[in-house]
Length: 268
Image 1 (cartoon, rainbow, N blue to C red):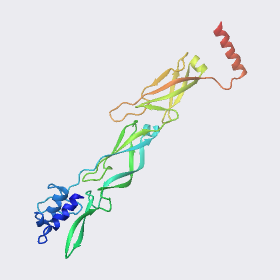
Image 2 (image 1 turned 180 degrees about the horizontal axis):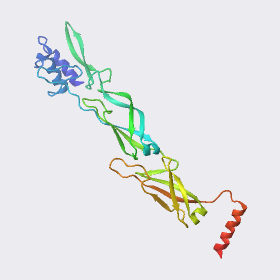
Image 3 (image 1 turned 180 degrees about the vertical axis):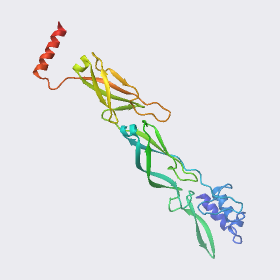
Image 4 (image 1 turned 120 degrees about the vertical axis):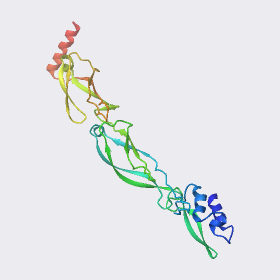
């Protein structure tokens, strides 16, 4: 506010001179540029350009980070998503200065005064809601950033939007980096005698796995390359299946007799 008051004082200081001459400037643009943007810039809220060729320049817009939640299936397959986000943009009324020029009558003269921009309230930016089509690459992991060029804050060159990935919980799979982890429930006879079982993959495919005889609960099987897919120049993750042993339900009389026989055999 002190700068605006000084501006008004300088402007009115010598009634016999123009605003630029009173402050020792060559013209209106020199006057505004010096007070509001320094010798190297311009006062974009007024839209003036100096006789020495100085023009108002807008800096590059800031990059913005925004969270995005995606499912493990989306991370595995990739896809597209339409998102809504609020992005701070340079105020179109004041050009980011927070002030605009206003002509006022002072006696018989018209003077230019700086007032707070009504559009942005003096902040120089305002929030703008956008709908953005985003491509999700197959193989993104927790905490990864998806770059959307030119969708950050507006400026002489628009900044970028970075979407920080958060993977939603899945009922059967857990992700650590690019590796996937899943329980592998089998019946007790399958663990004792061995068997070939089928695992449904994250994307719906069928994976075959051989359970060796005498496998204990907690044994981990690695299916190489069956985790999340690789990004460019990377390697796919692995799938780790942890053996869980279940007993049959219900326990029928023949099954009870069978387990009783196993108990007697173990005790002898």
